Image (cartoon, rainbow, N blue to C red):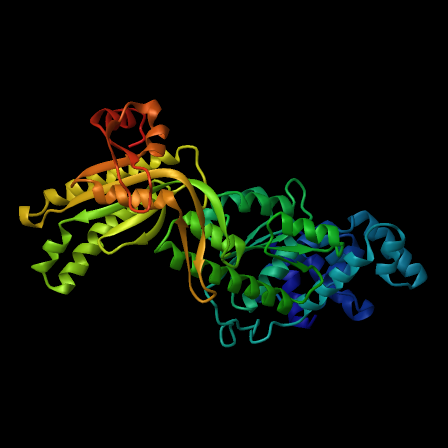
Length: 496
């Protein structure tokens, strides 16, 4: 340390109430004779304990930008600060070092107080702590201050010293940092801090980094990227971290430049994923988005599923559009179809496609639910209600009607198209019948096929209608009309 920084460290010890001014002056007087740092001098005089010195070093690192400049801190203090070495073991090793003149790290490893890996990590921290951050004038703080990049990192480590070092390094690279030594508190504060990434130590008491990662990935912030600091090079542990949901891991001995580079790499990937999610979410349900993001590439092969298909078509829209300008037609169509699409997504359906003045939706693909039939019919009923509410605010000549057809049965669901352009859809006779039922439906009428009627049987009877001929089928298809009794039954069971 320089004379000024040594004096400032002594002032910090006084501020913390660990020593007095007279004791610091006595230690400073010893420095020219022994060459020891002020902290070591205070230790030798019996005015300070090693745990107290470790605490003061942690505070000094955290306040580094406020005038307390650290030179290369003792290796033993870094090991204690990282909780790799017990203060008692360090005292014994230091005494042995004075007798034998050997390296402290070797003595600690021989005594079983720590591992070589932990010694290497501590040496790496020493180097980062002693080097002034590039581009940052720590004595003055502002002229060379780093440019903040708007990213916020939550650092979770049970060691105050490690947190202080990591925080300093990340701030130097332009990150906002929120530090937590308690992983449980970090979990509670996720929605308050709103970090862009969590950087967590692996080995922590109570809740280790792997379990912290699992809890984040299974909660409402599951998309939050997690980077784990680990001292273990074992393949099994690295694989375990990835299985726990970690987006990446970085060795504790890595330089802060490497840590920052890995953070940026993870953030680039997750940012692109979120961009894709927002893009897809404009056109389809979250279920399809999750399926696409989970599989990476969209598979062109299909999968056989039993689904409920819904077709909805706006009646009399062609005549309505004849008296309006094209821009007005588009605005009205977007208004109505937007409402209908929102209903589909709110009931857990997949918006398959828009069809001019109508749409096609599917329940049961790509994900299944136990109430797909009920949800589809409830969505149809809510579509009718939405259109009625819309019509109540318009003049009679601007009011619209809706015809809906539903059918339940087997389809092939998957992505259809080429490598350049694909579309997730369902194909099969079930889809054709649903489309035909929609065309047969009168204004503000819902018609369903036999499969859908069977799925609704426990809610009450539907009104059977004469079988209808469908192009391409040799035999007519059964069809049913949704009745007020069914509507009431679904409302009672809160399905609509």
